[in-house]
Image (cartoon, rainbow, N blue to C red):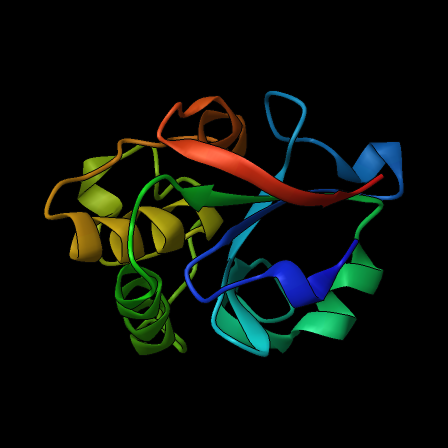
Length: 146
């Protein structure tokens, strides 16, 4: 995967190396927002929070990665997404946050992406699972790790 193609605001969708770790419904199991030289992601224990990870470490962690970008938007759009994602670092994690409205003050990987894109777009893209990102026709594939 060519990380030099990534721009702030890009969404990385991942799949784990071990099949038993791919427990989410659908094929993909995690997303993160690229911020420039790192990614913002919500992680289960031991972190239980939204964290920032270096891009090189993140890429090594996953067997498959696809990177998506919103169509026809200027670079400032991606910067706005990345800046909002950074404000979420340290927020509490909850695996079910994208499915249940009452958990809106907690985050999982999908709600980090939704919140960041909602801030830039002015509306919620409505993703509930990582597979929803890959099916969104307003996004296009930039690069991937197979």
